[in-house]
Length: 624
Image 1: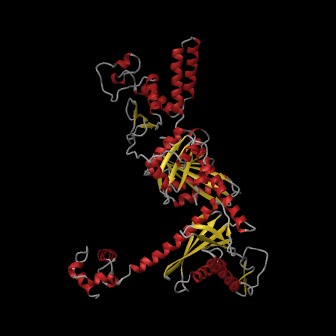
Image 2 (image 1 turned 180 degrees about the vertical axis):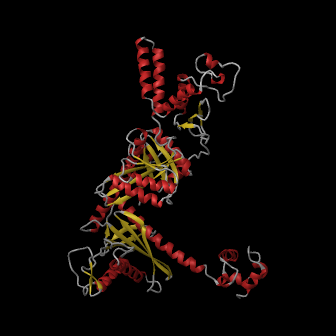
Image 3 (image 1 turned 60 degrees about the vertical axis):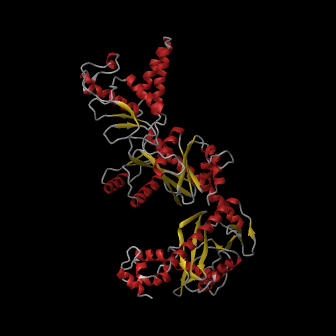
């Protein structure tokens, strides 16, 4: 279970964006921070919070965060995620008027440079968005000061040039005093400036500033200094929102001794809209480029949302083959790039940085949980695979069981299984538990590579000593059925199966430790219990994990139980009437409340229900 207090300790003292989620994993708030560590902690400390924030905090089940390089990047990313996910506790923007862009209408014979807050598909070039509107305005002013471009919104023929021409700030294209080629030379330089190709221009201005200083013209030197600062602000563009890249995936990779984390950043419509991360075990011996190649092929085979460009940290051997394959699927050219410098490289580095943070946090959690469990349970090895079971029924009817798996300290919902009880009739939870455990263990013994996978290292029963005994009895019965006369051998804990006389036989009997997950009177997890009824002392963090484990298996079992029960309840005599389907049946039951009241109704009453005509009403009355 996500332990907020423990996660708060892991927050880095770096700028970034944090995402608050509720129990349904829905994003309820997105925020930015100069220091994630300081900002996120404030929400969970006693201080004067508004009622709105108090309510938001009460709904937080878990949170995540993305580390960036500076506050400006955090600001843009925050805006993009809010617009994408529309969290209920954020101020929701209705349009693109949040941040300004610089627009060059290059489709015009004599393009102009303007500030806009809307992006339109009109063939123009857009640069931004700018977190600081003042910086965008300053840059446009600088461009108009440095380059003699038109400053009027619409280019119209004039009888005489405007004042800007006379003060040497415009070449007067409205009067035909400059050719298109000469004018576009300026525009190309401006585009280079806005795309960050500023080194040459900066050096030129620095030389001018030094010259002005030598001549003691400090006013001019200060003016040039301000120009340089404006250029530097523009050149530090936000790599979370590069308008020149419309549809890209950026993939970062991080490795540990046990696991690999792959992080993907999604940029759509020139904005970073989100991310995903994936974990893979037992890949520590593979090279990064080999892992990336395998991941790209597997990921895009299942994912139809293929971008125009995929950015990774290094070239992969089968790059051209994969590009052609993806291009065929997308019916458009797809490139796989390994940038060596500039903004794109920094974007890949940001993905890798976040992959590393994600992996470090997970590794820390897993290691701590496994080590504590090994110590508390008194085991000789780490309990890497733990299974838990729960029985659900109402007065012995619709009895089912749920099974959940914790693999390497992480609850794996995709490994959950459901059982319908076959041999027990009436309410007898211990016997139901025996049946389920026997069936589950036989699956792995008879088919080790089947859907249940390997046998568990530990079994947690949802309950106390009664359920512990039931699980132990099931293990003994399996040992008797598959063992060599039930003889018990000390030594190996791993089960080996071999063929003997055309029947499966356990070379070593199963020795799976069993513990109970005990709840208090309020149906909250209280402790782990061993077979001697001893309650084991565990940390608060492990208690949260066990609680979530128990809640998960309970939800699995009760959801399946309700599904079977509801399916049975909806069956009725109405199913036998031709012309009454599921919709009409639900309408009748909703209107009258029960089958008995439907039978007592008159034709007039029945025809009040939508879809029920007189003919159907007579058929229904025939059920009496």
